[in-house]
Amino acid sequence: MIRSENDAIFDRLCHNSEALILHKHVHMKRPNAHGWVPSIVVLALSSVLVSAQTHVTPPSNKYALSDDVKLGQDAAREMRAQLPILNDEEVTSYVEGLGRRLVNAIPRELQHSEFRYSFEVVNVRDINASALPGGPTFVNRGMIETAATEGEIAGVMAHELSHVALRHGTAQASKAGKYEAGSVLGQIAGAIIGGGWGQVVSGVSQFGFGTAFLRFSREYEKQADLEGAQIMAAAGYDPHDMANVFRRLEKESGGSGPQWMSDHPNPGNRVEYIEEEAQRLRVENAVRDTRAFEQAQSHLKRLPRAPTTEEAVKQRGRTTGTSGRDVPRPSGRVQPPSSRYQTYREGNLFQIAVPSNWRELPNNNTVTFAPDGAYAEGVFTHGIQVGVARNESHDLEEATDELLQSLAQGNRLSRPSGYDRVTIGGRRGLRTVVANTNADGSREGIQVFTAQLQNGNLFYALGVAPQNTFDSYRDVFDRVANSIRFTE
Ligand SMILES: [Zn+2]
Image 1 (cartoon, rainbow, N blue to C red):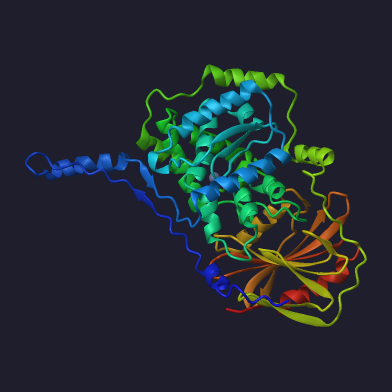
Image 2: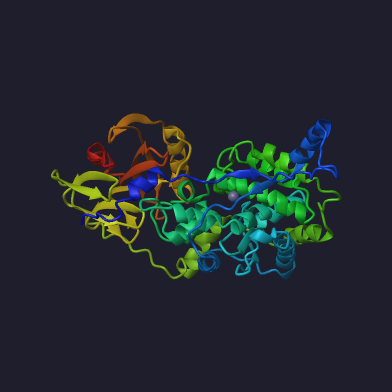
């Protein structure tokens, strides 16, 4: 039961540095024929330097290009099984044409000949778009319907295509260790799909472990913005339209907001730096609206209103049985937690003591402890799940907010009323309780514990029990959380 492999995990988690550097491309003017440049000219040259576009360096990646293609194709197949693809020649060929135009503008050093870009429209009304490793790209109908200009669609697509060209999915997986949520495929697909879709793609799990673990880092987001702005400009679009669409999406994202915003977190000053980049790129006679754009929009208006992603997934789940996967149900005969506790060592990361009648159920990325009858593949009704979520905020409260937001994606989760300060393994921690309503209408309580690891990633433990017995489990969850020791 004791898993002792992966001794280097904690080390990796703690030194999971992101070596992403955005270099400025410096175009030095050659000295004049005399090999001498008067200082007044050097001063004048600085405006050339400022107006050069920002050079984006792809992050290091231990995967082969063919892995990107394979993972992306697999995830795309899942997407098609789970989501309604719009079968409309006019709209699809419009998006395809726009996509090709952008793909052709990807700089040569990021053009990977193995990649197979494809473009499909998802018949849902939420504003979102996603691109999978190696090229499969999905644009929500809602994105096209609500765009103010063609440049706005191009901006979102160029951002997505930049994640593909810079290979962010596999770059992120290259850094993932055990106890980082998401299997490699789930992680990659979720990273790009995010949120509700991430949950769909990474399969059956009780919680929608979506965005907080799986979405891209802020560095990658900034890279995709800058590279995307350059691709747009090279394709004849004005990157100001990218700034415009993000500004609009952000304004609309008060509350839950468009999914796109939580899948692609704002690295800070997003609109500002895109506008600065647009200033440098200075596109003349940019394409904003085309006849094809207007035609596609008015064509969509004539079609029946699209469902939300959630409605569409539910609908398909009813008709196709969630792509043929049966969710096993726990048997429900559950013994109360033993008062005797058993200690488990989890890799080189932590140790934990749980009631001795709970079993250890390791997954590639989390470990769950649950009694017999309370779990089935990927689902548990009583017990505690422990894992590590990627986070960069270095602020415990903010990181915990993000964790809860990601849990809320695809779940009917109540908002926490506040956080209690606790100590977990000698570190500052937080505790809160939220309620979740399952798909069958049953309710459960979740006691959430979080603490921050040295690298900023978030250690979490989620104690779960059905609502009618939840109160009797709360002390058990506290005791389990108290037993946690980090074993550095
Ligand atoms: Zn992004």
